[in-house]
Length: 246
Image (tube, rainbow, N blue to C red; front, side, top):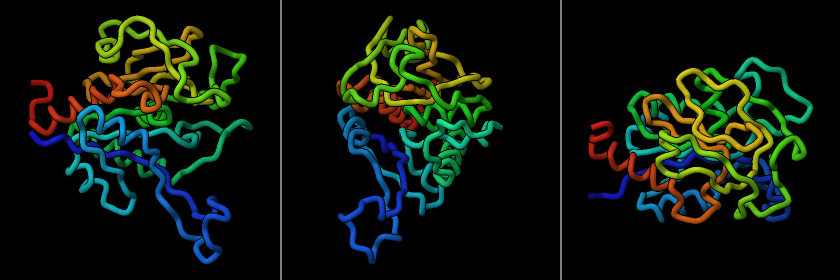
């Protein structure tokens, strides 16, 4: 059987952010950015990764895919969940919000399995009607965020909900990294909490129908192949074979 094709969302930045690495004549062009640990993790788990572009029709893209990974990145625009911006709000990328929300809607239309990571979890919660806390300080909990520690190191634990999809992948208490300064506030209807940090911060969500698994940490930076990537590859293979839920 062919390896399932799994799409990866990413950023689009102006080339000027590269500074001296780009000639002035090209400072107003843009480049697409995909951190390599995402496709590497998918490949190690047995999938065929593809980095997605915003320049293709979303529905056409999703119809070709067997699974989707929504990656980390900039803060979700608080206007999406009816809030005013906090003074600690980070940079926004509203065009990315539009694109990824469209990807998620198209994925839902065809029951495509979705793995959502960090910003991806927050975006999923907002898309389903939930809200976010726009900033948490390190001293308010167990370590959100830990910008001064390598993302490849576990900095705190999370407790996984028994009987959840995440609970089927992990058991009990696991070590995770922490590269986020925003967290879930109100959980969206039809989403279930699947992992919680010792301080109560929600670290895992999943959909009622079993097609979305979302984690607040960055599994692509931890030991590979991580169980979450094995999940998306397995579910993508089932989608390709037409056996999801069978």
